[in-house]
Image 1 (cartoon, helix red, strand yellow):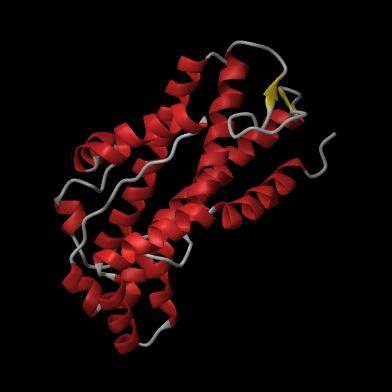
Image 2: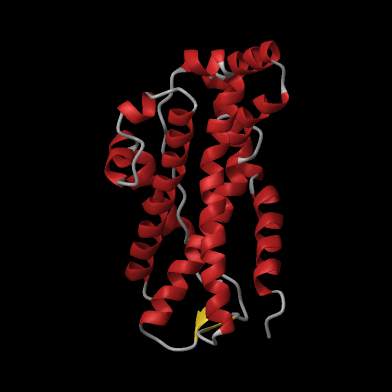
Length: 230
């Protein structure tokens, strides 16, 4: 696939993925008593409100990372009431987990279609793996486009799932720790990690060492996907 069509495909999948991730946060928060995201228009699969909220993370950064590294990364955000989170730390932890959970659901859906394509002979396993080449189509045209879309969906959502569960702020995994803590301890934990400087340090560490977490998760998922195939 040529560079520009590949970039557009990556961007389409990235926007859809980020929208599902943030909508997952918004849905969980709304169901658990915080309607901030709902009232702010974030409880939607329409990407426009999410892009308007984080244009740098949803437009500029994904484009830059693609042309610099060959794949897309970015960010979005979901508004919530910090008073609600402080009052109900376990609910806030569930809200945090809901985003990566949405990524996991997309991984499973993509894997099902990839496996069906392999079983039907539409796809084959590539000799060299790439994030947009989990499988290769046996014929050009629609099947080739489908293989690329499913491959990117599979890879990108595994990356976001694993990366966001790193237990460092501002990743969702840091908030998810609240599920294991007592109420008072969870409140102190929230207060400490809410400091901007702590979040910046956590992001730098996660960015530099994230592949130590992502790589084994990705390889495990590929092993499951390819098991039993020729």
